[in-house]
Image (cartoon, rainbow, N blue to C red; front, top):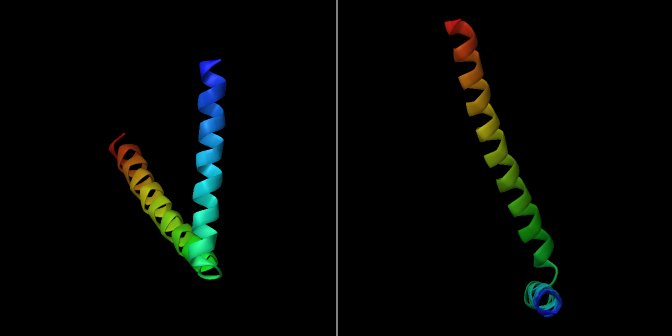
Length: 62
């Protein structure tokens, strides 16, 4: 029963946050989401490059 209440509260909180995001940012929300997407993709790319560099070094050491 407790889990159901927490799940309902989390859903209400998420809906409230989503409403505030679009209410206060309006059309600029798309720019924010686009900018965040680009930043996340760049960070993921950097992480992948580091991982590939590490794998290449391990391969050359063999």
